[in-house]
Amino acid sequence: MDFTRLLTEFAAFWKANGDILVSQQVYHEAAPHLVLQAYLQRVVRTPIRSLRDPSGPPGGGTVLREYGVGRGRLDLLVAWPYRGPEGAQAVQRQAIELKVRAEGDADPLGSALVQLDGYLDRLGLDTGVLLLFDRRPTAPPIHERTTITATTSPAGRPVTLFRG
Image 1 (tube, rainbow, N blue to C red):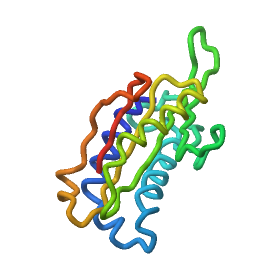
Image 2 (image 1 turned 90 degrees about the vertical axis):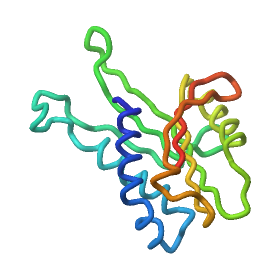
Image 3 (image 1 turned 90 degrees about the horizontal axis):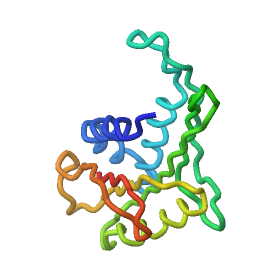
Image 4 (image 1 turned 180 degrees about the vertical axis):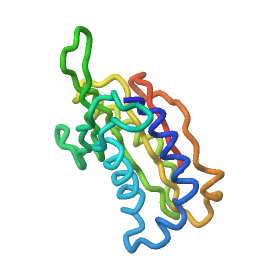
């Protein structure tokens, strides 16, 4: 699964729809979590066979919410089956942590990277994804603040950073 491409497509969706999606939610803190989860669930569970690629493998991936890792809970864990070398069945896992920044909150990047590092260590993963949603009224417009960059965790792991 090309998770970078998937995240890039989500960023375009978020830029176009994020304001309306989160403004109508009663639980403003949960809205970005629910939107991302619904987006991923639709893509990950959908069979890849399509008009563009009728020979593609079936879907069958899973999106696990609040996945227990040690004493903590990772926000989302995506598991995607694929055929490895020599056709052996394998599973790609992608750990995703989400944070929402509200009015008066400091930027959660540093503490979130530490938290994600702990999850990655327990799961035996080399990379992770961190999504930071800015809900402050003073935040730049959603189309300006939505970016995807690369950063490094305190333990030196590559992390894909989404800000929206």
